[in-house]
Image 1 (cartoon, one colour):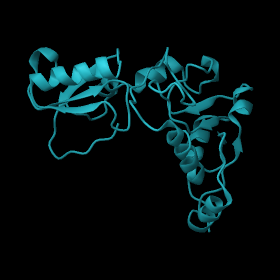
Image 2 (tube, rainbow, N blue to C red):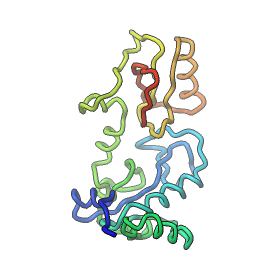
Image 3 (cartoon, rainbow, N blue to C red):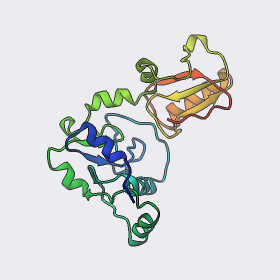
Image 4 (cartoon, rainbow, N blue to C red):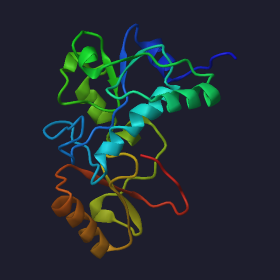
Length: 211
């Protein structure tokens, strides 16, 4: 059966040589494998980081392909490999290295976000630019269709409050009135200790959004 295009091939189109690091970054969890607590903060709240540090890398390995090397410190067991060979045989088996090996040379790293532990020159994209591009407030500026931004002095309810640097639905709230707005802001500031920006957006009923 012919192999199909995969994510590693997309990376290889832009970079002659690169690593892919399929890990989730956290600012909330000190025990996360990649913990950004000083720079490039991300709002992710409470999660089981043992699961987060295990499942995403394994899921990516199933379909990433081998056009670039993946950096992981956990490897699939024989049952997983047999399952992939049976049901995902159109994807070439991933080529892997340990994170320590990959971070030791000069080959750039493609990651889900900028890492404070990694020198800027090791990032495949400038980390400051990467952080800016991941912000929800940047999306309208680059011409991507998105619900209309709302100024805090001219709010119509219901609306969406979204933490500027967040993903996977974390930091997204439907706000129905000014009292709820105060409660949500207090929650992200006082309970989640988020000091960064948030945005307000038009609420679109029955719409499903990601990010």
